Each structure stands twice: as structure tokens, then as C-alpha cells.
Length: 207
Image (cartoon, rainbow, N blue to C red; front, side, top):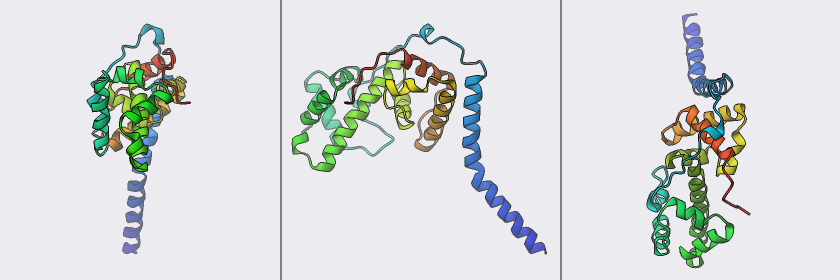
């Protein structure tokens, strides 16, 4: 009889331990949504104008949250030949599909194998999106976190303007920050960036 109770307690403990991360994620969603709808996010988007941020090109290509790739720095080196040395100038040079293809060719796209060519094309698009998100005032780390959480550029970030969507997006950012090791900004900060995105004209064209 004693063994049965012990077994039952062990099973209950195991279930409780297994469900703990799910409960934590649910609490994050609830907290973010409650904050958004509880009146703390009452400022006007236009009252807090965006101050675009920019970083050197080598910082943009050097993402410490993924394994380094030699082609990333090769792209940065070759872009420096034509005066593209920071995220702001890169965004202007990579805001259309044609321009991004030209950057890919500059990086040696014609002479790369299929896997490397796919890597180059993907990263050029990812960097363009990150540089675009920095127009809302996001630092590079936050822009990367937003991107892996579902907002690839300013236009996509603006879709989270609804208070409930803000809460869900913030919860996704929290989960990804924990998983990938990013610093997590406050809900108010993220909310401001979402509002700024809704008043920032789109720049990146994907088609």
C-alpha cells in the first residue's frame, strides 16, 4: 500500500514538473496581454517619434547566436569597397529584390555552390529586415529577437498593433529570448516599437 502511494506521488511530481514550462509560458502570455489591456500602454504613437539606430556592417553580419560563416564577413568586406559600411547604408542598398541579387553577385554568387548561394541570399534578406526594424529605434539584438519571433521587417511588426497581438508577440519574444540567449526588453519598449512601426513607411520590398 505504501509503495502504491509513493508511486502515485512520483507520477504526480513528474507531471507537475513536465507541465511547469507550459504553465510558465501561459503566464507570460497572460501577463503581457493583461499589461497591454490594463491601461499602462496608453501613450500615442506619434508622441514618441522613432530614432533610427544603426551599427557597423561587421556588427550586422556577426550574429553570435548562430555559428559564424566565412561568407558573412566576405560580404561585409566587399560591400565596404562601394562605401556600404553600416546597417543604414546597407538597407538602402538592399531594399529591393534586384539590389539584393546584385549584392549576392558581389559576394561571388555565380561561383558559389547551391548551399552557399542559399546561405548568402537568406542572410542578405535577414540583414535587410533587421536593419529595417532598427528604424523603429530597436537595437540590433532586439531587431534579431523580433525577427525570430515573427516580425521580419517594419511592415510585419506593424501587424501586431492590436493590444492582444502585442501581448502574444511579446510572449513569443520572451520564449525566444530564453531559448536563444537574447536580452529581453520591457513590454513598454516593445509596444512603443510596434506603434512606431505602424507610422513608419515600409522600405523593404520582397517581391
